[in-house]
Image (cartoon, one colour):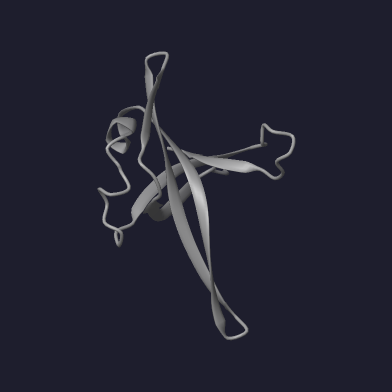
Length: 101
C-alpha cells in the first residue's frame, strides 16, 4: 500500500492567513526548510519554501502562528499529504506543490 505522506520541519516564513469557504475554515502559511551539502570543500546551503494549507480544527490553531511568535531558533513541524499543481500563468515554468494536513 502506498501513502502520500510528508513531514516538514522548518521555520514559519510569514504570518498565517485564515480563510473561510462554505463554512469550512482553512489557514495558509509558508514554511521554510533548509538543507546543506559540501561541494569542493565548501558548504552550500539551500532554502526551499513550502505553502501549507491546514483544514478543520488544526486551522484554528495554525492561524495563531506568526513569524514573530515562534523564536527564530525554534522550528515548526507540519505533517500531511502533498499535492503538485501546474502554474496558472503561461510565462511561469515548473510545478508548484502544497502540503495538506
